[in-house]
Amino acid sequence: MKSMVPLGLIVVATFALTSSRCFDSAKVFRVKPQNEKQVNFLKHLASIKQLDFWHPDSAFHIVTQMEVDFHVRAHQSRAVQTLMEQNEIQYEIVFNNLQEEIEKQFDGKRNFTGRYNYRKYNDWDKIAAWTVRIAKMYPKLVSRMQIGSTFEKRPMYLLKVGTERGRKKAIFMDCGIHAREWISPAFCQWFVKQATKTYGKDKIMTHLLDNLNFYILPVFNIDGYVWSWTQDRMWRKNRSKHSGTNCSGTDLNRNFAAAWGTTGFISDDPCDETYYGPAPESEDETKAVATFIRNHLSSIKAYLTIHAYSQMLIFPYGYTSQKAPNHAELMEVAKAAVKALSSLYGTKYKYGASASIIYPTSGSSDDWAYDQGIKYSFGFELRDKGKYGFLLPESMIKPTCMETMLAVKSIASYVLSHAL
Ligand SMILES: [Zn+2]
View: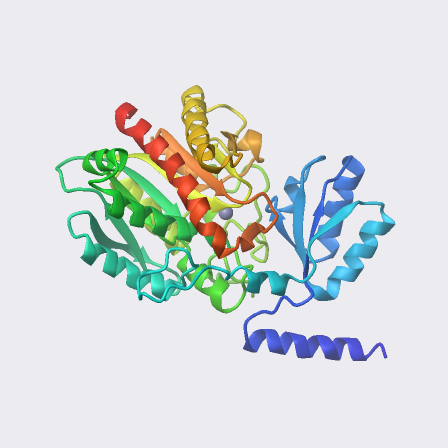
C-alpha cells in the first residue's frame, strides 16, 4: 500500500498545475501558545510541515499569548493535528474545509443594473476597466495615469482624485500590496466611489477634494492579485522570478529600502512568504511606487497603505523599536482615526507603532515613506480579527469600507490642516 501514496500525490500535483489550486479539506488552525515551550514547538512544526501563516505572517513572530492562525494543506492536516495533540497544544479549527469558505465569501448581492458593483470583489480586468470609466464619468475630479508596469507587464494605474486647483498637498494611498487581502482593493474602489459621489454634498469630502489630491493605487500587486483569482486564492507575494530558484514571488512589503533585509524576521529564501527579494526595490512594482512617490515628495504629505486582517492602525517604525520623531502626534492622529472608525459599528481597532503592536519587520512601505520625509504614514489592517481572515464575505465589504472611510477622512482632515 505504501507505494500508492506517492502515486496519489503525483495525481494531485498534476491537477494543481492544470487548474486553480483546490483547498478541499485544507484547514485553518488557531493556537494561543501559553509558554515558551509551546512557542518553540510551533516554530519547530513550521519547519517540518508546510504551514501557511495567516497571522502573524511568519512563524518567527510567534510569542506567548499571541493568537496564531495558520493554514495547513489537506494531506498534512491530520499529521499536524496529531502532533499538536501529542504536545498538548490546545487548538481551535477555524476552517475545517477551506475550499467551502472560499466559495462562501461570494455572498454579496448581484446587481442587475449594469452598474459597477462595489459590494462584490472585482477581478483585475473589472478594476482596470473601472479606472477608465470612473475617470470619464468625473473628468473634473478624477484622472488616470500609469506609473509603471508589473513583472508580468500589466500597466499599474493610479487615480488622482481631487479638483484642479494649482499646487495642492497630496495623500498617497495604495491597496492590495498583498494579493490575498481582497478587502483592501475593495476599499480603494469604495474610497474613489464615495469621494466622487459625495463631492459637493458632504462638507468634509468637498473640503478635502478642493484642497488635497488623493493618489489612489487601486491594486499595487496586480500580478499577485490576478494569481489569487485564477490559481491560488491564498497567494500573497508578487509573481516575479529570480535566478537560482524555482519559487516565484517577492513580498513587496519587505522590498522597500527601509532597513532592507536587516531587522526582524525577513527571509532570504525565495520560497518563503516573506521573501524580501534580491535587492531593495528589485521588484518592478516597488520601484514604480517608490519612484512616483520620490518624484512627488514636495506635495505628498501622507502615505496610507491598506492591508488585512486584524483591525489595527499602525505607523512607523517597524524596523526599530525606537519611537518616530513625531510619535506622540502620530498616536493622537491614530487615536482620533480609530475613534471615528468605531463610531459607526463599534469595531475595535488597536493602534500604535508597528514594532510595538505587531512585531519588528523591515523593508515595509510605510517605514520607507516615513523616511522619505512623509511625516504621516499609516498602515491599516482592516477587518476582521480572524473569524474569516482573508476570506471576509462580500456582505461585509460595505460596513468595512464605510467605517474605514471615516478613519481615512479623519487622517486626511488632520493632514490638510497640520502638514507643512
Ligand atoms: Zn498585508
